[in-house]
Image (spheres, rainbow, N blue to C red):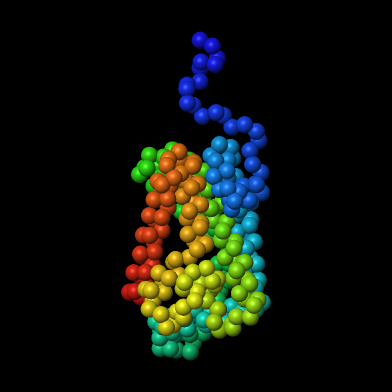
Length: 257
C-alpha cells in the first residue's frame, strides 16, 4: 500500500505554517473569531496576552476610580444604592457603620489589586463547567486547557467595558452617582436608578449587557470549534448557563434586594 493510501478519505489536513501570533489572535477575536479559536485547537493553547490586557484594563479602571471618585465614596454609594443595605446601616451603631464601611473599602480595593488572580480563578471554574457541559452533554472532544484559552480570549470585549467606565468617570459623572456594580453604559440598567427601580427588574436590566452577550457569543463559537461540535451546541452550552445565572440573580434580588 502506498503512502498516499494510508490517510483515510476525508481526514482533516494537518495544520500548515507556524500559526497565529498572540497579537493576531487578539485582533482576530474581534474581527474573525473562528481564526483565533481554530488556532487554539490546532496549535497552541497559550493565553498570557489576553490575561495581561484584561488585567491592565482593570488597573486603569482602578486608577481612575481612585483619582476621581475615591473608594470611601464608592463604598457609601454601594450602601445608598441598595435600600435594604441602607436600612441595615441606619439601624447599626456608629461604630458598626464605620467598621463595615472600612472593610467594604478594603474588600473593593483588594479585589481590584488581585484582579489577575481573580480573572484566572473565574476562568478556571467557568472553563471546568463548560468543558464538562460541551463534552458530556454534546459529545464534544474538547481539552480543558483549550477551553481555558477560549474563555480568556472570549473575555477580551471586557476591556471595552473597562475603558467606557474610565470615560464615564473622566467626563464628569457626579461621584455620588457612580455605581461600581454597573459602571459603564452597556446595558439598560445603566440608565435606571437602582434606588427607584424594582430590584429584580434592575438585576434583569443589568444582565442584558451588550458586552456580556458579545462575550457569550465568542465563547459559544470557541467552545464549538475546539470540541468539534456544531456551533449551535456551543451557543446552547454557553447561553444555557448564562440564563440559569441570570434567573438566580433575579430571584436573589427579588428576595433580598
